[in-house]
Image 1 (cartoon, helix red, strand yellow):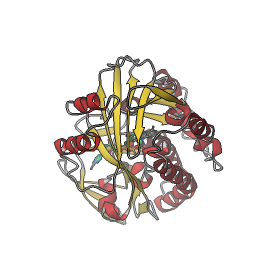
Image 2 (cartoon, protein in one colour):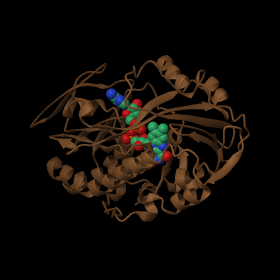
Image 3 (cartoon, helix red, strand yellow):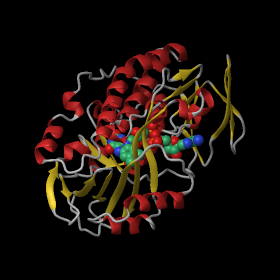
Image 4 (cartoon, protein in one colour):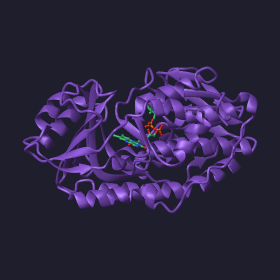
Length: 388
Ligand SMILES: Cc1cc2nc3c(=O)[nH]c(=O)nc-3n(C[C@H](O)[C@H](O)[C@H](O)COP(=O)(O)OP(=O)(O)OC[C@H]3O[C@@H](n4cnc5c(N)ncnc54)[C@H](O)[C@@H]3O)c2cc1C
């Protein structure tokens, strides 16, 4: 079977990996001209580590661990008043998202067709397949199309309808950018927070660089998602007059090449598939950065979707139903965690006692539902050495 995947970040290449292992033919189309080196760190929790292990990638991912330690909570005068335990923000294992994307691409590029700098323009499906028109490339027909193109998924818009129907805004906007590690942070970070605003800076890449984030509370804003200058202005206005390192961070934000800005939002859908089109990762069930589970969901979703397609012998209707059955409870729980995380995001000046309590109750510790990862064992001859 020929499968087209839209999006080459985490979910897309992870699915490509497993589909190839099960004998499917895979094309991945990515809108960006090259792999995106998205600067922020993402973490893995629980079963996602098992999936990495089954892919034979756990060792390589561990080698890229940020080894982030506890961080300092700072007041406006630059004095530390509490310590934020690393488990709250770095999970079981944390790496830069760009490193993860590169690893997944390297694990698949030899036997998966990657098309960069293009995007699906239109989809039409019938009993024979999905007829896809591209913005640049020639039209092609695939047996299945998978939308792994993130929170603002274009595949979802084409197959299910406009984004507004599925997005739940969590009332937080975030800007992220790279900068010099001018504070000399050593595997740690500093955070500043007042009601409605939060800022932080963390060391990155063995302390040779840093990443900063500026978050503010807001109802949905009307702005142009392609107008970076406008987004920088919005952030600068919100943080004007703030203490700690904020003036320097605004100066850096105005110059950063990789300035990123978006709302924290979730995707809520009754169904993740329609006919031969199915959604994966943030495109179908984004749980928002405040859940800390998006990467794990993308990896586990890819493993389950490919496994169910193989188990059903390519019978997509049965496979998509089984995929949804397996994943729904897990996603629901993470989305709940994402909403709770958003509610306590701007808690002003938390006490150490409160922070220690949150660390002791991180969702995976309190989690009732554990995803039982099925053993979707693929044909051995397609496997990478060291993987299942
Ligand atoms: C600021 C921030 C911090 C985060 N921190 C964490 C964390 O600590 N832990 C964690 O687990 N998760 C975290 N996440 C979430 C995590 O990054 C996502 O959940 C995860 O990357 C989902 O992967 P994905 O592949 O589904 O989507 P994405 O990573 O969003 O990738 C979508 C891909 O599709 C491509 N694309 C978009 N439109 C098109 C199109 N029309 N055609 C073709 N390609 C297209 C994009 O260029 C991109 O490559 C964070 C997210 C953000 C924004």
